[in-house]
Amino acid sequence: MIVRWLYNLLLWAMTPGVALYLLRRARKQPAYKLNWDERWARYQQPTRVSGVIWLHAVSVGEVRAAVPLINALERAWPGRPLLLTCMTPTGRETAQSLLGDRVEIAYLPYDYPGATQRFLKRYQPLFGLLMETELWPNLVHACQRRKVPLFLVNARLSAKSAEGYRRVRWLLSPAITGLTGTFAQSKADAERLIALGAQNVSVVGNVKFDFEPATELVARGAHWRTLVGDRPVLLIASSREGEEPLLLDALEAVTLPPHTLLVLVPRHPQRFNEVAELLSQRGVRSLRRSAWDETPIPLETTVLLGDSMGELNAWYALADLAIIGGSILPFGSQNLIESCAAGTPVVLGPSTFNFAQAAQLALEVGAARQGQDATEVARLAAQWLNNRSARAEASKIATRFASAHRGATQRVLDLLKRRVPRD
Image 1 (spheres, rainbow, N blue to C red):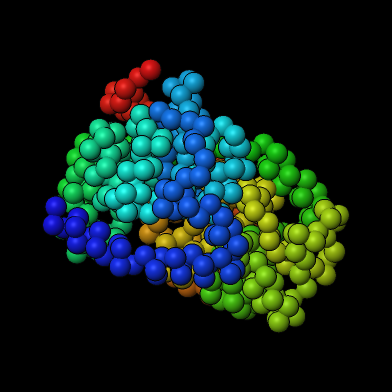
Image 2 (tube, one colour):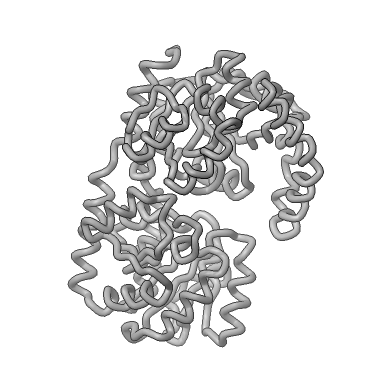
């Protein structure tokens, strides 16, 4: 009780800083100004839905991973309304593009006691699912008081994060023990979570393996391939701040096949103009996706900048090989699974803690290679691009790898059916 009181006191002290943070983000990404009141669970209009099945996915990656689970929940609880909450505008936009009106979409309010109570009163969830590592003490406590079963799904916890969590165990332990159940990605994740107090822990695998790209995106990528012709295509997927200069320098120092087309897709849309300016300063002959009329790309164009939202799976379908962003600098890597599912082998940098198990499995079977810095990543990419037969074999391996690890969504669903009310 005292711990939560201190936590709430800290939250209130931080409130002006939270508001300033949103305003600063809105300078580069105006969508942060929209739906402002939802952040504090102050709603202007009555809800269209209540008695929902509620799933929380922080941002783009979690939203995409949630889609197979949402499909399964719709089948298991037909007619029951679904609520998907996010924390970022890009997550919300992704949810809208992937799911449309199939679900109610809203921001999860910040973890103030009154806000969490208003949120639960408004939507009255039958049960809730939190994707990956989302643990909010007041939210878990409010769900316990209202007897709302709450599960941590696709749960992961790296050794580094576990050490950090142990330092604030006094705060997080009640939240972890307050969960109805935890569905962990791997045995190692489960053991770390149990050490922090998690109960009813099951190892189910990674639901991100169950994601199926939209058919039209795969077809779009195949169409783009006809416009590129026989040129090798190297994709830098979901690059993070600071990684583009490192990779561009490293790729200039290796020998790529003649006329290789580099496709560069930054992770965050607010950085599109920044990366375009970087290419311009370097004198790179580039073309922005937003300016491309989908006619054949001239040979003198060496970089195609993917400054669009929601087309990553089309880029994977186009590419021969992908360097996964977020792995060059210590961001923990972006999702390598979707690339492998498209039959596009991947090169990883040293930082993969967000996808530790998937990365290790991909490396073991040969669907991925890993470099210890941008220089080695570029060298490995060049080796693969210059060896057509090895790359073709790696493509087959990547497809088999992604397919072999599917099924986590069904395992989650089977466990939920035994633990939560049925209509």
